[in-house]
Image (cartoon, rainbow, N blue to C red; front, side, top):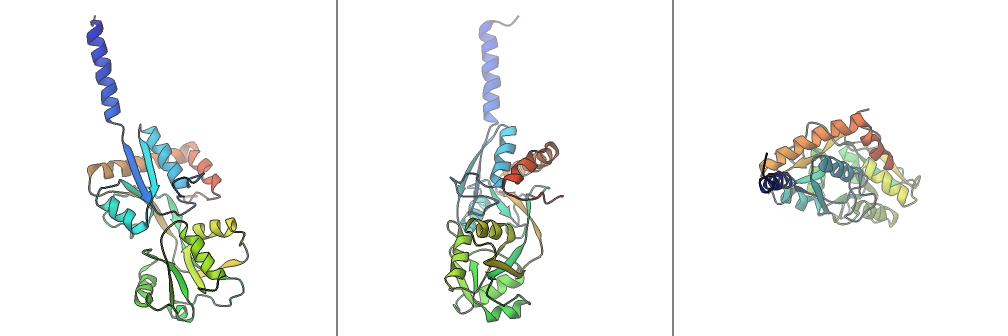
Length: 258
């Protein structure tokens, strides 16, 4: 039989090992509801709820706060933070991605309902003042158009990537400072509804095809790959158990796999 001191020592060793395996996973991204909200937002965005639930199931905790998108990518790329949420694979080349996506994103053009303009290819953009968010990537052709014309206020209206930038996009339409904006359809629709602008701000053309978006983790440290694999496994388990559907229902978002 083990002596009491020997037994207590083993218990202490076991507890110490368990706590050593617990990590605080730092997630950074700019505010982009319904995917992720502000640090104090309730609810915080479905991706943050997913991350917290999966992390807790594995004995970890999530440290989440907002950061300008380009700064968030740099911080995670350098290993100063662990993961970003809401990333296309083209946004975060070289990052560690889980096998399973965390959503489907499609960019659309939006305008006030009294405007007759409709998107008919890049050439049609020259006829409007397009509001975009600084440092965002939309697709290769649109990014090239924005880059070529960003100094021309008659073509590009640049919005700072701070706070709920999509609200500033919509405000520029209402104030007639821009004619058209581009934004993820889920993000735009949620803000349009919250601002009571349904029917006033309408989609006027598809900017991109739908694409999968992810939680993407640091390539600078081994823990990035470990967390990506953990999030992928956890996503599958949440979908099977029905927990994913419960979270998505809060945000009126359909499961992109169904």
